[in-house]
Amino acid sequence: MSRNSGRNSDGTFAKGNPGKPKGTRHRATMASLSLLDGEAEALTRKAIESALGGDSVALRLCLERIAPVRKDAPVQFALPEMNSAEGAAKAAGAVLSAVSDGKLTPSEGAHVMGLIETYRRTLELSELEARVIALEQSHAA
Image 1: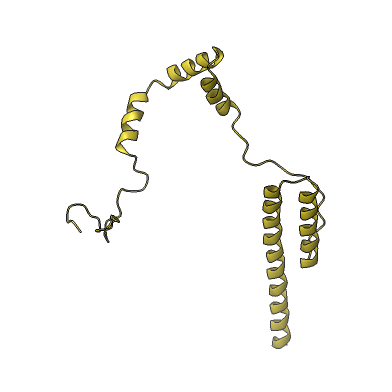
Image 2: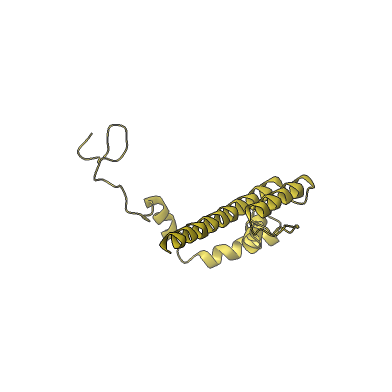
C-alpha cells in the first residue's frame, strides 16, 4: 500500500480511509454545472424550438419531461378476501388465473403475488401471536 494514495494494493480503500464524503460531486460534474448555471431557461427554450422545428431527439426529450414513462400502473381483477392462509391461497390462485387469461402480465402477477405473500405472513404472525397470548393467559390462570 502506498502511503499517499490511501488505497490497498488491490485498489480498495485502506482501513480508516472512507474515500470522498457522501454526496460529494465529481470535479467534472461541478465544472459542467457551473457552465450551465444561468443558462437553463435559454437551453429549455432552444430545446422546445428545436422540437417544434421537427428535431425528433429534442421532441423526445421534451415529451419525456411533460409525460414521463410510467413505471407502475394500477391493475384491476377479481381477488377473493384474505382473512386466513386459505384465503391467501385462493387469492394466489386468482392471480395465476388472471395471468393465464391475459388480464395481468407475468411481472404484474409476480408483484401482486409478493403482496399476497407478505399479507399471508402478516396473517400467520398475527395468528401465532394470538395463540401465544392465549397460552400465556391459560398458564397464568
